[in-house]
Amino acid sequence: MRHAILIFASMAWLAGPGARYANAQAPASTGGAQTVDGVAARIEDDILTESEVRELGAFQQLVDGRAKPRDERIRELADQWILRGEAETAKYPQPAPDDVSHAYAQLAAQFASPGEFAHRCAAAGLTEAAVRRMLGQQLYLSRFIDYRFRPAAQVDQKQVETYYNTEFAPQLKSRGQPVPPLESVEDTIREVLIQREISGRATQWLDETRERLKIDVMSQGERP
Image 1 (cartoon, rainbow, N blue to C red):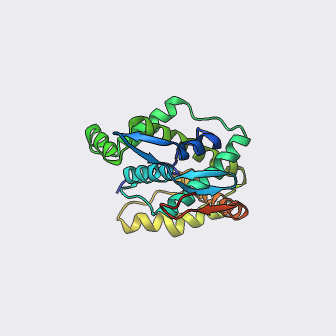
Image 2 (tube, rainbow, N blue to C red):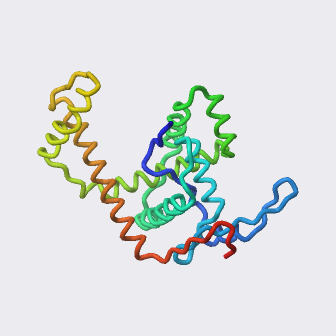
């Protein structure tokens, strides 16, 4: 099973609330048939659409080999909504096109060949432009998380030594691999622990923020 290369599998949030709501109400033509995008959830005065939930599932299928259940995808999209609002308020910059291209190349390299990657994208219903767009948003949100929470993520020497003795060294020994001295891996271990601290702080903040918001999740197929 392939693993996501960044913290959050993400959706595009380039359109404002009004644009997304208009898309949810307007019929789209596909081969002569008309489909109306549904409202999956309401967050404050904004919405999440069913197409956003489906697209996130397709991206998860491509990256991880399976899509999460609908309720988990809606929660993930709600977290992205919160993060994006904070990032835009902070005027956090979007990633450079070269950074997005690098992330796209990293994802493609997880597959056996470019042909297999293209086939899996097509099977998931994702165009190259859609994958690049979602990777760009993934970069944007994951970098903002680092920017937002790294200053408070402090790791001391005792924590580094504890990790080395209780996790790092035992794992290598169990695989029959040599254990390098602490001094040679100290910086790597420190960064691992900082990332853990960032993730924990971000999760706690998102949980607390989500509780203060009015979020109404619609049943699948329920009309707004």
